Amino acid sequence: MALSKSMSIGRFIFLMGILFLILVSICFSLLSVSLSGQFRSSGRLMDYTGAWNDIFVAMMGIGTSLDLMVVGDADGDDLASYEAASDSLSAAVERFLASYATDDESANVMRRLQSFNEYQQSLIEESDAPISFYLDRRYVDVGIERHTEEVLALYRSQMDTVLAQYADDMEHITRRILLSFLAVGAITAVISAVYLWFGMTIRNTIGRAVANLDAISQGTWDVPNLQGGRFEEFRRLFVGINRLKHRLAAYFRQLQDRAELERSLLDEKLKNETASRMLISAEMDMLRSQVNPHFLFNSLSQIGLAVLVDDTDQVLDMVECTGRILRYSLYNKERLVPLADEISIVRTYMRLHQMSNADDISFSICYDDGASAEETDGCLIVPMCIQPVVENSIKHGYDRSRGHLSIKVVIGRKDSMVVVDILDDGAGMADPEGVLRSASKGIGLNNIRRRLELQYGRDDLLEVDSVPGGYTLVELRFPQEVE
Image 1 (cartoon, one colour):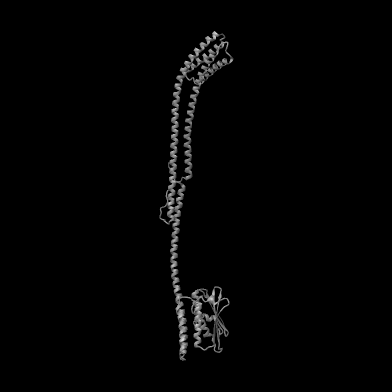
Image 2: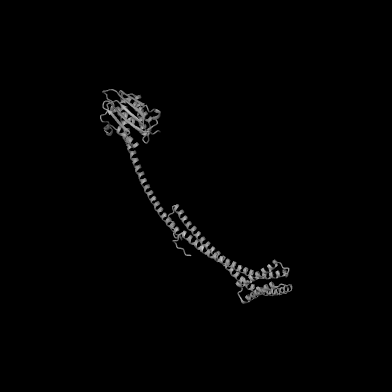
């Protein structure tokens, strides 16, 4: 059976079901006709046999009732039995003549039997003496015996023909029944084979689709496209899977291209960041290199003055302080330092300054109300930020006409940062913002501002406030980082 590739599964199942019902209906119709023919043939045989049986029973009934009848002693029941038997014989003969006397011989035999029955009935009814009844009864017995033999001979010949016809009918009916069962079996086998083919087709088709989807799920895009499909649903399924495969392949190729592009951009970004960090590191090194010579020049000048006065102990003490400050500056180029280390260096610097100068300068370090040494000493800050500010306070704030300078370092906490304020009551500045932006007033503040900006990426971590002849306040802010 040729199937269209565009036939749907539902339509195929519907057509197969209709065909199956039609074939089964035809087979069962043939079987029903055969069985009904068998029943009809059996019924005709039984009716035919019954007709003959009625004749024989009626004839025997006549003989039996005559044996019971004696003229003068017969009662009403015996006479009634005789009349009923005679009437039954008449009715049986008439039925046979009407239904089964198909040839002249059987019709003649039955008519003679009917005539004899009518004659013997009138003869018996007219017998009124024992002698006449006896003679009439003998006549009837002989006639019944002779007609019984004639009817029996006819019955035998007729039954042979009827039985032969019945056997022939049964053979044809049995053959038709067998053919009907064979047809039903053949149809069942064909339908089963069709549905087995249908099941295998579905199984193979779904297996191909599943194998293709498994390959796609593993990222194998070079699997062949699904082709064929005997039914419309499978054809659409194959088209959808092929389309999905191509779209997924294109999508993943785009992802790969995008990933390659992003990887290239990331590599380029890393290179740029590396270069930027290198530039920042170089600038930080340059800024640190500016701090060290500046401090070293001032320290050597002070040590030279101490040598002139020939104070050996003081010179050694100053050299030791200077070396300590230089080691601290040189060994902490690449990392942040705890606030406590920076404060210690500031104290060392003040000691160095006080040993070489007789200026009236007071110095103190204190903690704000919201902070303590335990909370802030471990915070990490950029090294060499507080000492240069203190040095600038001494250099630019001390006024000999006033004769005194007070420097106070206040450590506190603000938001998420450690705040260090360096306050002096020196000469002050008329334009603190200009001094902060300019490098002409020494290296200190501009250098510190730039290092803080490079380290933390912010330009708001150093502020200067000053009043000429009043005070100068430098505030340093360090985002909190605990060692």
